[in-house]
Every structure is written in C-alpha cells, then in structure tokens.
Length: 148
Image (cartoon, rainbow, N blue to C red; front, side, top):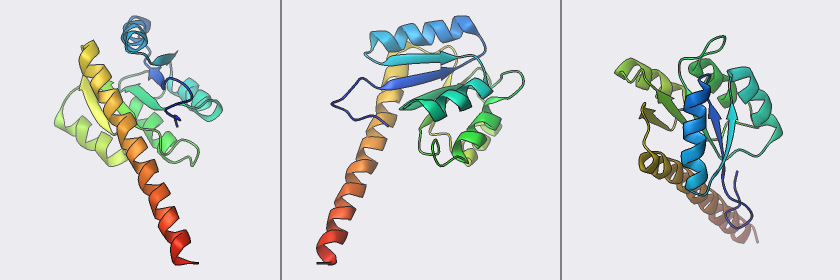
C-alpha cells in the first residue's frame, strides 16, 4: 500500500478491452495517479504479487478468468487481500453487486466511467486504507503503553 509522502498511488487497471483500459489510464494519469494496465486476471494476480498496488480497478466480464474469480484469488492471498478493489462493469445489476460485496469488492462503478467519478472513488479507497493504518498504529501504541 501507498506511503502518502513517498510516491503517487499506483492503480492497477484490469480490463480485457484495451480501449477501456487506455481511457481509464488517461483519466488516472491526469488525476495524479500512476496507472498500471493489465489485460487479464492471471496477469493481474502475477503483477499484484510483484508490485505495490494501492487500488485495483477490476472489469467483471473477461475471458478465461472473470472479475469475480480474480477478486476471490486476490482476497485469498495474504499478500494482496488488503488491496481495495473497485469493480468496473457494464453489468450493473443487484446480483453482480451482491456477489462482489460478498467477495470483498470495495466499490462499484458502472461503465461508462467519468474522470471525476473515478478519481473520487479511488481517493475514497485510498483514504479508507490510510485511516485503517492510522487506527492500527494508534492501537499498537496503546497496546505498548498497556504492557509497560
């Protein structure tokens, strides 16, 4: 996850449609993020293990491995379980949202995605992570004081 002062947040885009990935990357770049685009679930899983990724934008409908399968694999790995995932899909129905939330998806965006909406949702996920870290640090400090 990101250290706010060290580098701009790295956002992975997982979408088999290269045009969609390019548009999302363009929007992210203009908002100060570092986009990393991959075209498949297996590629996402491999890269997420190798690089520090702060948020993942996940397409739902992809060949070979759909977005739900990728989310399941990410959430089952201790190295990637805490990465927030925003599902981006043309299939914006209640069943898809329910399944995504059950698997641990943090947020949903329906295609087409607009730049300001995308940036707001990504920043919200980054803030959730930062707040959790501050809370964990505070709890650790309190535990240390308690055990003195």
